[in-house]
Each structure stands twice: as structure tokens, then as C-alpha cells.
Image: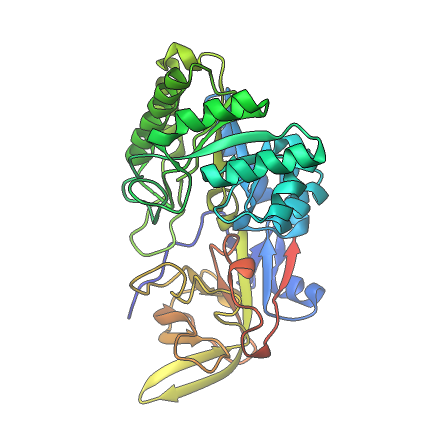
Length: 409
């Protein structure tokens, strides 16, 4: 038997042991959607997460949603009312962000491979471009001159440090992301001299960290770096985007990051910041921490079989919708996401089973030798932590399967 990750707090069952999501029975939501597989996102949990962040962080720090985590249109429209800005990473995400109701001036666009048409769309809309290179800066200035616009430009900085313990290291050493810190002052001075509307710095050292101390240390180094660069430039950045980094517990042994501890440390860091940053605004950019726990992936058992003594529950879902849960999205060793039999939620395990999807590949595993209540054909399997990097980060068209349904409740 192999353990699975911790089920997020707040999920309960009704008297029939059926999992409730947003107060509704899982099977009722499936009926309303028309079929499985289905992603369900709980809006109350999204709102509670934002409120938790605001209670923990210094009041002067803004909250930006990194919509790459989940770009589902109804969820974006809901989040647009709760956060201070959206961070996008493509022209398609820019269009979705604008359609959500978020003001263009509260949208920033990062990414190392922006095409000219994407740069033009961002400048024309009035969004901020987080420049990733001197070449991209030159293209942005040229495009702005051609269309007669004053571009809003920030510089993404490749810091000389990374976030310790992060699942994805975005800074330190040679990286495709951002401008090396040593080259930033000269570039920013050129932007200012060109007449561009310089918006500040975007400094992102890593993501998916659970250690509050490591996050706090990185934020302190980020603020210090922003101050050093500002002093070299001779101008204060209007905004310093501190990046994100706060992760969620997916796997056995993981524990939730202490958001309050991060907030206390950040408050101390900002209180002691260099005078050059006295009037700068600050923001944190979070994706999965805001939305992951609010999502549940529901898939139905279509077959139960035994092979060489091992029991398999075969579902109508799989890695084409939940690539990360299958262990094929950024993990070296496969470990089990939080998983349950939705119609026996909270009841004691009765067997050890392997939950697989419907694809013709041995990689399609949603639960590897996990202890669960007995599962039979027709039962619903719930995969938790499914609100981030699920539907949009998975190969939905693999083997012609098609996308899962999605629902905000």
C-alpha cells in the first residue's frame, strides 16, 4: 500500500457518505453537468482563500492572480472581483483576462517568447509588459512607436538567487526567464529615456514552496535586490512584483505553508526597506495557492478488474485531464495526489487498489496502490487539489478523448 496526499480541509460528506462540494452532492453536480469526467470549483473556497491571504499579508501588498493556474472563464470572472490584478503569459490569456472584466491597467504580461502581435495587443490595450530580454524591449519600443502608443513596460529580473525548496526554480544562474540582474539598470535607463511608462520590476525566484522561512528569506532578498537596482538606476520602481512561491500540499507528508508567518516576515522586510522604495507599491503573484484546493476532479469507475492479484479501478478520466495527478507533470518520482471514493467519502478503507484512466498507456495512473473504500462500477472517484494545472495543463485531445466538463459552484 502507498499513501495518498492530504485531502484539503473543508470537504465533508452528507448522511449518505456522498462528498459535498460547495454544499452540493457530487453525484448531483455530475447530473447537472451531464456526465463525467468533471472538474468542480468551489467559489466559497476561492473567496475564503483570498480572504486568508489578505488577513495574513501587509495591507500595502497587492494580490495578483497568475491565471495560468486556471483560466476557466467563470472562475476568472469571479476572481476578477476579488484580486487586484491578473498576470498572464500569452495573447490568449490576455484576451481571457480582458473578457473577465479585469481592467487592462491591472494586467501584466510575462513570458520569454512573446510574439510581435502579442506585444502589440498588450500595448494597445494598456496592459503592462514584463520584458524578458533587451531584444524584447527593442521590439516593444518599435511596435509602440509604430502604433503611436506609450507602452507600459516593466522588467522581469533574473535574480542571482532562487527559492530554496521550490518545486520550480525560476531564478539564479542561466535562465530563459528575465534579464540578468547585472544588465537591468542599463536597460531600465534606456526605457525611461525612450519615453516609455516604466512600471517597475517583476522578480520571480521560484514556485511551489511549503517552507515559510524559505519564502520569507527569498522575499527579503527580492526587496533588497529591487532597492539595489533602483539606486543604480537612479529612479524608484512604481511596482515591485515579488513573485509567488507559496505552494500547496499534494503528496504524503506535505504540510500547508504558514501564510501568517510569511506575512509577518514580509511586513518586517517592508518596514525596513531602503528609502528608495519608500513610495513603491508591492504585489505578490499567486496561482495554485489561490485555486488548487477549491477544485475536485470527478471521474466514474467503468470497470473493476483483477490482474495477478492486483485490483484495478478503471475510470472514464485520466492523465488527459489530470496530467499532474498521474505523475507526468514536473515530478521525478510518482506520488499519489489526494484521492477518495466520492460516494463513500470519509468511510474506512476496505481494500488496496490502483486507480487508472481510460488511455492506452501505463502512465495513466490516478492512484497507485492506495487504500480506499471498496469501489465498484458506477462509483465516483474524486481527485483533490484539482483547481490548478488540471484541465488547461493536460493533453485533453490525446487519443481523441476530448476535454472534461468544468463547473463553478
